[in-house]
Length: 227
Image 1 (cartoon, rainbow, N blue to C red):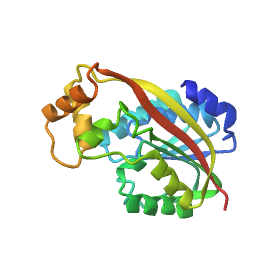
Image 2 (tube, helix red, strand yellow):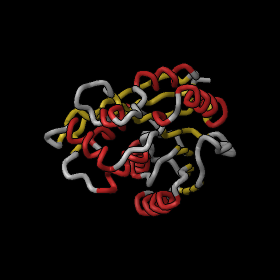
Image 3 (cartoon, helix red, strand yellow):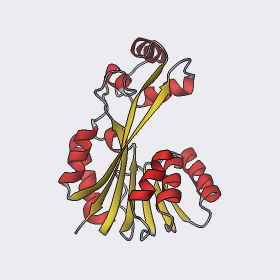
């Protein structure tokens, strides 16, 4: 939230009225971004394939932004055909590193060419400093499914023709001590090869012996379509 205050002071999204959130889960980060940084949005299209997450997203939107029309689409965003009309803002929060490089470029090109109006904005939030010792995404690499580096994602976004206007860094702590089963299953669901919960516990204990790491970084970047 402190970063959003900084974003709101430097990024001017007052003209934006339509927004697309891709793979938002329950959508709290996206909804809070809209509330703080794009207060004139009156329509949010959310594409999320998990049914329970869609229900929670709808509830959060009604409670936090009751005047925003929500269009909930239960779909895999890669196979989704896109909005009927191009939107002015697209939010890609913790989404792009689950693509293979060729798939990511294809998705971004489709977004740029067909989903976004001329002059529209794309906001990307993703893990950064993923090669720094002690970072929270080391566990994915240890389990055989490394997360795409921010530098590679940024290069793909720029390659499709979007222009970077702003970038912000967020540093935070993550507590790996005494992880419950649902926390372990989150990591299990994002690893390509089969791993047990004990495998994940062992990796956590080896990588984060104190249970806490403050080497967690996210990049939040704002891009704009100029043509």
